[in-house]
Length: 340
Image 1: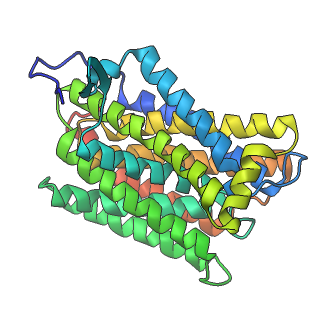
Image 2: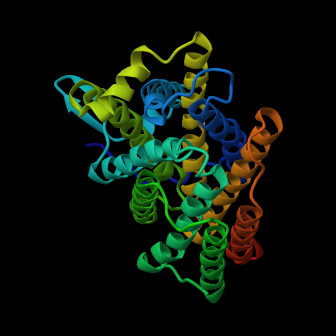
Image 3: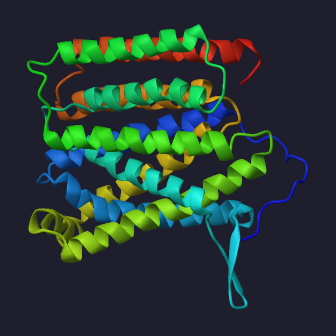
């Protein structure tokens, strides 16, 4: 397997804040469309969340290959020879990170499809607040210094979760929603740990290599797993997946589902590039989480204005405010030190 050489670092790429803006711009319509399709808010019958996955992820996979090809980034990946043919090939760690990314892809789309009792903002508080909690822990494990402001931001993140739960009539959550959040956070822990170890450096080629190898694993694994589950899985799983492949409904529903997949890939691209910035996780993760948290609020407001869905709950808005406060606390030291 070939590896990039020790050449001088390439020129600096776009600012992390441009990637964050791209993440936000893709995330608003992505989360709003996934929610609207699963609840029948677009004038068509509701589509089960699982049924959205096959077409969305096939389109996402195509988008990934087109993006990397358009930028000519395949050259940064490691290669493996198959006779006279050399193909881009991940190493064991980027393969593992790709599996984590695959889990994030599926769990993120499903997070917005658990019905009216679980809002976009509430799920984002659980998922984004959880990753904010993980970030300083990963930095500490990776030997990066974690100061008192990081622990203060951790306290704000936990407070946001408390406020969000305080606004619910009960502490009960749909089992599927709980499992979705647990898998999402576990996958992010693996990704951040591996990124810290392998990809955060002053050489952008290392980050590009990691990005390409991770991406070339993630969506193909998701698509393959969905096709296998549709063919041989239990009926409760295979039924909706087969529906997603053959009977989504009106042509507009197919088009909207494909758009969900394309937007999902764009969030994966921009979000991944934010996380792969050379700076510590306690800077990059807040930038990433800020973009998606604000996008979630934007999507909820859009659904409220255009489809008559419930407006954001006060407790959820307060919780989101606490997450944003945690973001400011976490990122301020890095910004003051000249990063960014």
